[in-house]
Length: 445
Image: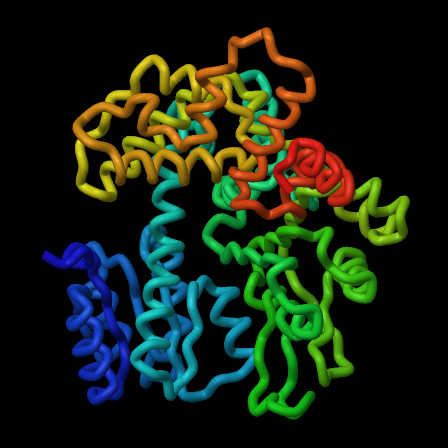
């Protein structure tokens, strides 16, 4: 049985050959596909079926695809929408997204482009359903943890959902900053509009402006058609600027203008475009230190720092580590169709006392690895990674010198980041040169 058997997709287009091609391609991928050649018939099907995704053309006789999008958004909140059109334009893309389309796919498109767009739309549906299903349960906003530190985070999220104020989320790498941003968005008045995550540190500097603001046809070599940027595609919703500290100073000036004027100017255009979005930014670095060294603009910092949510590192969250381990084990086993294992007392003790330099992301990867590699229905200390077994075995030993303890800790941090000395030095709070010197002293360099 295909994993897509229960996914129902409704394709709406007045061109019968387009209907046939899309239906055939999606059926081959295991989806259950229904078709309609006009909006009125599509609405009849929506009333009789529980449709997960609507794929609609823009230009159709009688009623248009925009009319259908508005009808779906007003009456079927758990249905995603993708618009396809042979008349691509920036205005059309922004308008479709404003009315609630989750994806915008211009014709002609390849089979692979269709599949990827469908997967993106369905991923958004799953995230929205997860947020709704976990609302009102012990998993506050879909986050796991009952520690006092996390209760402060939940309180801060609650206060932000009723406003449009800019939010700055701080915390170490792997603490769940994007999860908090999604929680804020999906519990706000903008929840039915797009949530657009952007990793500023992952986009090359020479492409960042065009990716954020979009560009007009002919703006530069290779710009064969106009294209909306992330800010336009987030219209009506939320844009999440992760790793905001990685943006170059020249881009920081332009981001400041967006925050001040709520408008963007596409590359190749002299006319600013007003936008209605909420901005959430995140960083794992100390922006105050970056300001002192001239690497981050002070005026941008104060524009971003309206509401701050500081996420605690996993090592400071006490028994949340065990709650998270149980949750991640259950989720992983459900995905892998495996029986949930029992953790021995030794494993629980090791998990609870470990430093977790990679935070929740490291815990998630470790749980997955242990479940995949385990023998039998129990996870014991022998199933732990070597550096955790070693730490756990010696954690109560008080007969070691400070140099021995420090050397062991440095080894553990290095192993947790696969030997990346730059990342290890950041976690340790020392320079790469200091790290090299300490490794030489311990005979490990």
